[in-house]
Length: 330
Image (tube, rainbow, N blue to C red; front, side, top):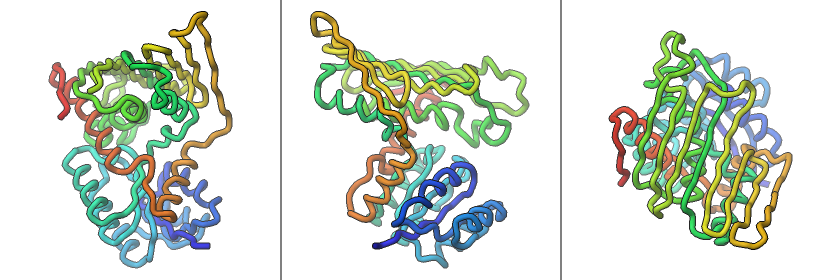
């Protein structure tokens, strides 16, 4: 059995989450870890084996890797995707893939030029609710879609790079991007976006330049209208990632990532169906999809080009809020 040799660029919390899942896969070897804080790389190397590096460039030069997991904060991205792709190393990269479309497009071009596999960490596409929603839409059971509503509500604050817009991009770009990615996956590309943002709950946090509340109106190319709200000022210890879709034949409601409710409005009498699956690990499934794509030479569910398209949408929303006007996406 071929074992894929995996390296890590960035060894913070999200890298630890990936490493713990990858370590349980028999066809994976955690071979190397790199971080600008050497102690973090050494800690993972001691736990999972492999070598630790302070420089990802040195790691790529010295290690014969099949794939790399890029787990860097948004502001820290440089040319790691381009260097890895040029060496024929497959790439799993956390979202958002960049803070500018110029860098994102360079990443996409490098991956496509060198023919490596890529996966972006939008693991919620592998959740039960997302998969069931996608199936119901593609089967035509909802009919034509007219309205889409989404919520990304939590009570969350950090006092590091995350609250600095120049480093994180803000809540919409760095966090609720998961929801925007799902709505793109469900309903296609967006033609126009209009956003309002504000800091209403954390006004006294020193150095905070990001929004804690946003409301965004989307016009999809299909003609459907979307409304998305996000906040970091909601309920402690609760993460509400929810969406509703109104179709001509049925209305769908997903109040959690493990369940979907469908109201068959075109039928008389009205019927309501509830689908649920407990115990699914979307992150592990996203990793497995990436590994299988490498081993069997097929596409992943979320290639880096998809990460670039979702980034383009979220950056356009921020631009709209700053300009106070709708932004049209090409």
